[in-house]
Length: 509
Image 1 (cartoon, rainbow, N blue to C red):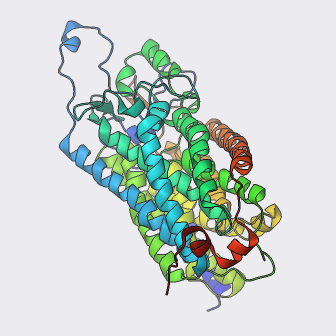
Image 2 (cartoon, helix red, strand yellow; image 1 turned 120 degrees about the vertical axis):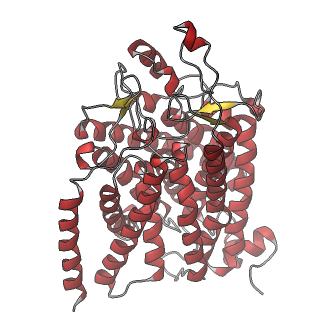
């Protein structure tokens, strides 16, 4: 049977499954579904509750009856705490060694250690900055775009400090939340380096990371994920007040479960800007730049997929049905993207490749990230299938149109996949399509009026905000670094390879 006939049969079968599957919405989750997201109440727009970024310490509902005032403070559940600690370790694994091996296998052997070193140093640097000021700016009350300084150096945090989840009366230790979110910040900055691999100065990477983390990542995290927690939504008036102190995009009702805007689009735009500003590699378009070890790339992609279960399923902050939904969606969307990318490559080029399968896996993971806890399983499969094919075009057709030397296709996968995932979240989160809808924390029920068109528009606003902020900050940051340190190594150093010229050692002997 020819590949085209096989592909046509697969499409027909998929259409039949969709027709049946969309009639079954996602199962209800435990307690008020944090992952279903948002407190609508009397707020001007639906307020999401996508991620653990319920950063403000959980507060008891404003005093009303004396009985409520006398109620004991909530205590963290050991199961939730253990789950979040494990998820944090999973997300750390995504960077070290997952992303390092994935990127490392894609570069030439003479640059392998440079990529590993950049990932290792960025991870360590960002975690320290997260401790010093990052967490405070991202997840404390301040303005709509930038948080405050109450938690500088994690001031006031102890093992007994708690923070809200997405269920009323449920908390986790705030230090767990700090560690979990720090891992997100670290991998986001690390993602950027793939766009300008093999020609950038190590010192330039360090300085750029500090500037971009401070002025692009932290504002985006605050705008999308900061809110005062579900216990603040006791009635319409309280909900309006609580919404007013949340992040700007949270106020608008933008849904981003685990980082479609904050992580993927944010990093991808920075990478693309860097590819333009730094310029193309010596010999680009004239010499073959082949991955030196697709074996390592496959291992790295597998570790990323494994770690992504913590990334997505941990973003609801509880070990419950919402975590299970995000977990299953992370499997299905990724598997679907592997298939669609591989079959698309098979039909277009005559052979499916290991590089294509690994890239398809990452594409699927990126696409489902903003939607993981909001869409049903059928929605995740559709998103994965579309994402695999669109990102395949992103690293081929779109890459040629853009004309940038995005060395490891950061924008083609994370940018295209992140934008697609953010927009489709607005579609497939609809209860009519199997999604969870938006949770109203005042009524303690899913809001009955979900508008796909309205939510997609809000999602687009989130995408546009991310592109503009990251683009402007990245361009300024690269120019500052260029003036202060210079951005790229000399042609001689580039030809020799960054392992030797920047670090004085070789990956292989």
